[in-house]
Every structure is written in C-alpha cells, then in structure tokens.
Amino acid sequence: MLDTFLEKSACRTPINVNGDASVNQQTSFIEQLPKVELHLHIEGSLEPEMMFELAQRNGVSLPFSTPEEVKAAYQFTNLQSFLDIYYQGANVLIHERDFYDLTWAYLLRCQQDNVVHTEIFFDPQTHTDRGIAFDTVINGIYSALRDGEEKLGISSQIIMCFLRHLDEESAFDTLFEAMAHKDKIVGVGLDSSELGHPPEKFARVFRKALDEGFLTVAHAGEEGPVSNIYDSLELLKVSRIDHGVRCSDDENLLHALSNSKMPLTVCPLSNTKLKVFERMEDHNIVELLRRGLCVTINSDDPAYFGGYMNDNFKAVAESHQMSEQELAMFTRNAIMASFISEEQKSHLLDKLGQFVSHYHQDK
Ligand code: HPA
Ligand code: ZN
Image (tube, rainbow, N blue to C red):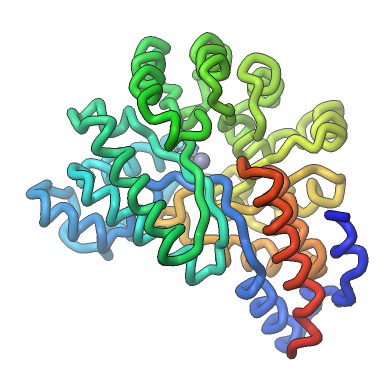
C-alpha cells in the first residue's frame, strides 16, 4: 500500500530536460514537495548574521569583522578544514536562549522549505568542554522544537552525537549526562573527524547506549573507508548510516545495503563543499537511488555549505536527469528511515501520496 502512490502517479515527465519550462516545473515541484530531514547538525545551522548577533549579546570576540568576512572564510578543502571553523563558530552559543534562538531560526527555514519532520543532531561535547552545562544545551534546543511542533506543525526528534576525535571516557561521560534526558533524546550518533577515528573506538559506548534504549546512527564512509560502514553496522548496530557515499567502492556492500534497505542520509551540498565529490554531476546519489538503496537528501550544516533542503534537492535535480517520482522517492525513503511511530509514518506517507497525485491536477 505504501509503495503504490509512486507507481500510480500520473506525473511521469522527466523533469530535467533542457528548457526553461521544465526547469521551472522541477523547481516548483521540489519547493512544494513535503520533505523530511534526517541529517542536520543544529550547530551547523548557525548563520553568520546570528553568529555576530550572539557574539555581541554574549561579549564573545570573533576573528572576523563582518558576516561577509565569515562567509568568505568558508572555503573548505576537506572535512577537517570545515570542522576547525565550525567549532570556532559554536563558541558564541552560551545561554539556553542562544540554543533556543538557533533552533527556532532553523525551524523557520524548515517551514520555508516545506520540511514537515526533522531529526536533528547536537554535539554536547562542543559545549560541555567550554563549561556550558549539558542541560542548558538540551533544554534550549528541546523547547524550540516543542514550539516548532505547536506553532509550525513541524515534528522532530533529537539525536546526540559523540565527537569521535575525543576519547571513549568523554563519550561515556556524555552518555551518562544524557540518561536524565531520555524523554528528549531518541538516539546517539558519531560525528567529527572520521579519518583515524574508526567506529570500534566507540563500540562499548554504543553497546551501553543500546542497552539504555537509545537508537544508534553513525557518520561513516563520508571521507573514511568502507570498513567504517561495515563496522558501524556490525559493532555499533546502527539504524542508519550518515553519509555512506563511499559504499560505491565495494560491490558486495552495495548489494547488502540495497537488500537490507539500510538508510543512508546523504548530504549533496556538503559533499561537494568538502570535496568528497568534485562536482555535483559526479555525485553518486542518483545512481544509488536507482540501484535500490534507501538514500535520502539532507542539508548537514546548511549555514556552512550553501543551502537548506530545497537547495540540496535542486542541486541534485539540476545536475542529474531525474523524474518527479524519483525526487519524491527521497522523501518516501526519509519517512521510512525516520525514528517516528508507524502511525506517524503512515500519516506522512499519505501526505506525500496526496501531494504527488494531485500536483499536476491542481495546476
Ligand atoms: N561530518 C562529520 N562531522 C560533522 C559533520 C560532517 O559532515 N558536520 C558536523 N559535524
Ligand atoms: Zn553530518
């Protein structure tokens, strides 16, 4: 039942043929498509303007004199070159209200982009290592998300990430802090520098997190080797792989991911900004979709990588020949891969089905 709307859909027009009419049509389809985001670092949604506002409000000095100067510094060569500047930006976040404002601004962008459900990451250690209390961070984020649900109708979940460049002990300390917030945190993840920090470093932390009832995800196969994808599945028992695009290096893994429908939360603009792929035309997301993998489109760190959800969808659609059904499939996959109840999934699948079947009729 859940799959039929895409087969039944009347909109079979390939949408990226040359010609303005079809480009406009594709843009409008993407803008109106209900979307679900599964890979978003809330600290990565800190826009330079807000960075300046919070720096001023909190008396924090920045090594830049204007938001334009900040933007000009966003020239990355790899993941580490981004992370260095990203952790520096987070220094302006001090009070609960700052975390609230950051999250609220992101939710307003979700509303603009027609994102109906989002599952966001936060990095507690980025803040607790600077003396900010765990509770300050989680309470600010959580209360904005509750308001987002109530006032904007956007549902959400929170996933707490461990910084993999830090040690196991620090991850355990962070997990123990999270225990008091099980009602707010659905799962744990693993982010930061992938090279040199393989999943096995956190196998015991993840086992404990699973025992405590948290779901697990991990960044793997972004810059790192396919062994990180295998180990995340086997040792960390992840429900989703974040990024995972290096899976193309291993035919057996491609088969396994396709057969198991293991979700990959892919971030196209992030991947080109961080030189995982040189050009969007070289990105493998459409090929992975056509090979039957459960791939999704996400924005990762939109303030740093040049765009939110619609921009990511448009960038993929502009550089690959895709049909509307294929674009809608990214949302379908994200709904199936989300950490919401079966009832909520059904509701969102219905909403998507209605959109796809009425899109052309209503014009
Ligand atoms: N990869 C790893 N760590 C991160 C990322 C990413 O893309 N964004 C924020 N932290
Ligand atoms: Zn990420």
